[in-house]
Amino acid sequence: MKKDTPNADFESFSFSDDVLSAIKGMGFEKPTDIQRKTIPAILEGKDVLARADTGSGKTAAFALPLLDSMSNLNIYSQIGRDKRFDARNRVASNCVQVLVLVPTRELAIQVAEVFTQLSANIYPEIKCQSVYGGVKINPQMMALRGGADILVATPGRLLDLVDQNAIKFNQIKALVIDEVDRLMKGDFQEEIERISKLLPNKRQNLMFTATFPESITRLIRDVMNEPAIINMDEFIDELEIEHRVVRVNHHQKNDLLAHLLHENDWEQVLIFCSAKRTCDNLVKKLEKRSIEAVAMHSDKEQSKRSAALKKFKTGEIRILIATDVAARGIDIDQLPCVINYDLPRSPNDYTHRAGRTGRAGQQGLVISLIAHHEYQHFSVIERHNALNLEREELEGFEVDEVPPSLPRKSPKKKKPKLNKKQKLKQENAEQQPVKEPEELSSKTEKVEKEEAAVNADIWGKYKKK
Image (cartoon, rainbow, N blue to C red):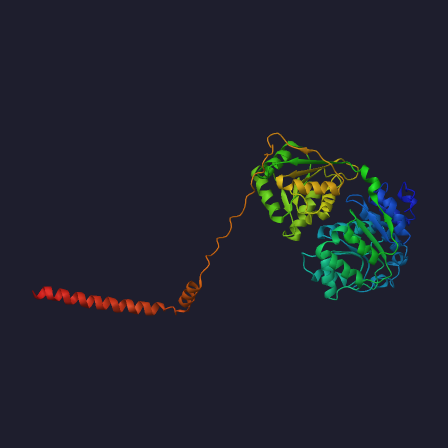
């Protein structure tokens, strides 16, 4: 692809005055690299496939040109001035114009907030709605009755709304798939393919991804039309991220983590765990070491997750412990450190985790704690991400040459196998009728009376003598 001439500022794009005013209102000074490369192509109406890491400014990269295309419809400028122009003139009931697909609830909320903040300074009448699971569907169905100019959705909830006949796609003008590499895994892949078949063929397609796994090639072939391919590897050296890997015995991970948190003055730390239960247990273990932390994962109520995320963004919470899925919506400009308590299952997820730090030109740090059983997996992560890191050991936490045995759950005791004779005896015993308590009681009374009669007879003989 021919390299575009970088745009020094937003004025060099063919944005409307309203959009430029919105950009100024958001405090954006100069476009980021991904914005310089993608905005011209999107404004031209081209399909775009862009490789962009988290924190590169990709949300604004697609939000700004899409909002600009809406502002140029002129119909919005007449809303409020002419009573004939209302919501029905721009989008029909239960319809949307721009569909943005994201992998998590938190990311859906975050992307919708960016659209809402930008559109407030362009035309407040532009309606942006987010839909996601984990909350009741009825309020979302009600919100879509009047239609939405922009809908940010997780695939599962979007299909729930389709099944309820709560949404129509005939007015779709653009489809955005954010973090497409995450959305082409597991059940997500089937959902994305189903959604793409429901949309009209004539539309603009925009895809953003941190990696280019083979799983997305089929989607690109089926969905996109001669896309402008923008690969951001040429700018990777601008990311100021330091990667470290520390070896530790498995049973000393908690102590080492507490040591790192005590010894370093990081303003905030995001700690990744592979399981929800591990997040909760780690919070309790850190609390015993006088370290306050908050866990965030999909088992937490949405209100609690939103509150934790908000407090972490505002700095009220110093340490957040999260799973990969729950952390997808975390977008903080100055997050100094990410710690991998557990390694990610996929090498691609390491890229997403690392992308949480080192944003906006700030220095970032990623520390991975690896026990003996994780050595080989981390080597795979290194090869995939073109890393070659020195293995560190901290004083007081030196690793054993022979890996200590991991704690195992005691196996359940198996019932002894019975031969045919024993099985038949057991079956016969089970078929014997159980005597009622009253029958047992009456028999006992009868025996007692007989014994009393015998005793009376014996004592009677002694008395006669």
